[in-house]
Length: 306
Ligand SMILES: C[S@@+](CC[C@H](N)C(=O)[O-])C[C@H]1O[C@@H](n2cnc3c(N)ncnc32)[C@H](O)[C@@H]1O
Image (cartoon, rainbow, N blue to C red; front, side, top):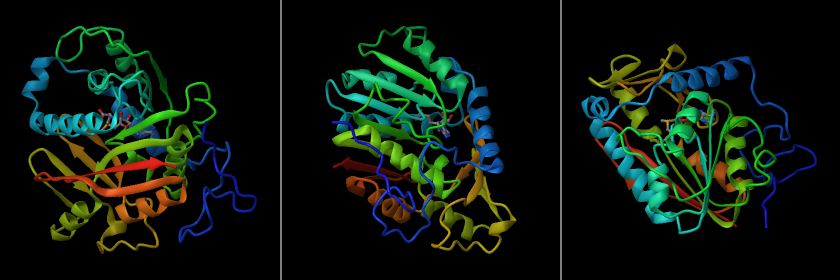
């Protein structure tokens, strides 16, 4: 049975009226104002412009160990939760760097969506068997559909009506791009919930807001980092105080050598969990898998759809 969006007659919220936070309008309407749209565009342009690396370039990257760690985290999650024959939705799939991981898990069907057209093109090339960054040729055993689009802006249940429901939805290193506004954060979660089958699983990875805020407070100014990354907040956050009543739109600029240079948003994990509880997720457990590393801690979440 396919899950559908929850409808509410008055506020059109996505769940029972118990939220402490304002509800966004539901429906097909675009959620974005001009500035949010511009930020989403910036993110898309940044990732689109990044070209696939050769094996030599990859190995010479100053963040090769971080890349390997991130890949290991994703491999663990995929091996833990994907089952043979699963139908998988990969939100913000990027250039298809996880295709081999999904293949190893012997999934049955894959839909990948990303806002960056260039990344979707690279993903398609990789899927079609052109050499990947390991310069290997690969044929994948599962059929796939690849689309470009903003996963956090519009309802995806209609666009993916023929593909849903999915057994597993994955959003790796990307959910935080939905926290520019409450409406987008809610849309992201509602998309996940509406596309998963009952009992389906969501896995995701994003930066740990606590670590970022702690480092910001320890810094002299509004910038901190090291030789391979920096994070910069603007003057709006000069007091380094963040109200739990305004948990959305807490933007910082993230630079990661050889990888990222664009705006990102803080995701307070407790609020992420409260929001997720309002869409029909049965279980949301932030401590299920919890891995740390020197400069950045990722918090993995697993949720099961009722
Ligand atoms: C750090 S990359 C991760 C890519 C991939 N999930 C992985 O783990 O290799 C973040 C990805 O999120 C995508 N992204 C950002 N905002 C998005 C949005 N609103 N809708 C869809 N994709 C988005 C970017 O284009 C980029 O490919």
